[in-house]
Length: 248
Image (tube, rainbow, N blue to C red):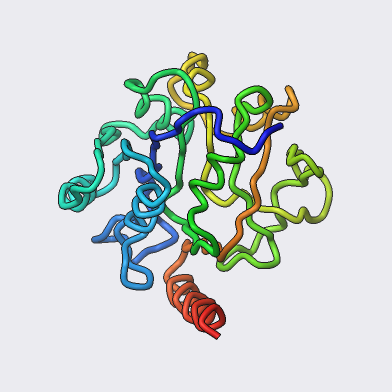
């Protein structure tokens, strides 16, 4: 497996259609992707990361308080952003991506969640994932964060990784060292091959694992999950401490 990009991965999809119920009462009037953390909305953290990494075209799915999200992204002019409308029906994570990428060619593209983000320790995590991608050996590449270093995450971990980056699920084991950190490189043709309208991205994770083609890239930086109102303050405190440490 090489360390050179096998494709110019310059398309992305952002999952922003969730209801944000754990964020209430804030999300009674503001969609979760537009909640601000450290002076920037969660959605803008994702969009900025993609732009920094050279992604030119991004589709965002919307459902709850969709008009606010459309209005917000309409103010951005530095990249080509379009909307995938799920106002009438949520399609789950995989179904939402499949609908959003109808205009994408076959091949790899990025998927980002809108409820987590990261601070890069190096130039660009998106760029590093692109360099990690290997056309011959991978069907999906997940961004991973080390469980013990993650901010706002209280689970037991998701994956184990071998020396080459192959991933296996935690399964029945008590803990796993890595968590899925909300960014993926996936193949458009793999999503388009699924006939169901509604399905989870976990289905593609399992398919890739069964073929030994699910890989993980471990984040070099600070990863933050913002799932509750309290998590906003926790994230901002962690960011301040991280930046102060980097400045020393």
